[in-house]
Image 1: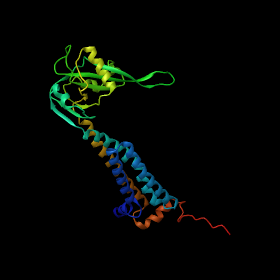
Image 2: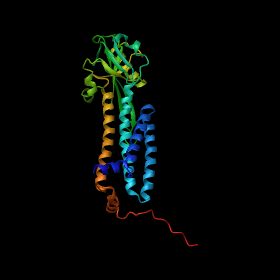
Image 3: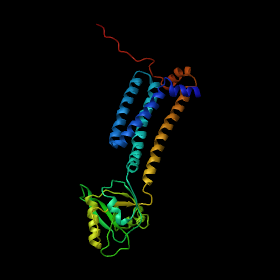
Image 4: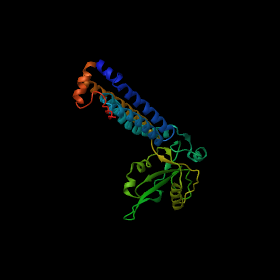
Length: 304
């Protein structure tokens, strides 16, 4: 059985070619997803898929079904390894290449965070979220064509203050949550992101400031008499800013490992089904494909 598995996996059955092609396509697709973008990685996967599928199809229409099966299997499994696995590695790359702003007093954070990037890691020495001074901006994201109602996005923000809130206090940083429910609703109050504001984590992931976030900050600043500026960073308040990065890295490798092991397991079952010796392949082929032609059918030449 072991020799037959080696024969099927690495011999003339194209099992070795399917596995190598699967690994090569996954590596190229994931690399392009990380360094270019995810759609480009998907396009790369489709190029490999089309090439392998066409070659396997040629083997099948030629009557060599036992050669086409491993290649077809590898082509199908590319969708899992390239698209799903690539997604996790793209999420990891966004955090892994982030800048780190660490051990900075809240009053000086605007000096060192100028031009910070998305998912920048913030670790501040002091400060707490003023959960009683929340501002929101409501944006109609999508308008339903029949009933005419909107699907809203709510930009919820709160200041990070050195001391407890008072009129005229300076907000050197802000925390934000993009919610699908109003910022003063019970659903928002019970969300995990909102509950994190109640803890003195003093760390977070950077959020690029857009005009919608700026409008929400302006609402809170005017309503509660806060002093702030456009250089004040906006972040997601969290206990571990690297959590998403670590989880994405682990999930990405778990997907790739699972796909590769699944391919090998299916090929092991396939090798068992076709027989335990090389001379069993012709008989196994007759059992599995009784209607398969022994050779490709050829057209008869028309009589001249």
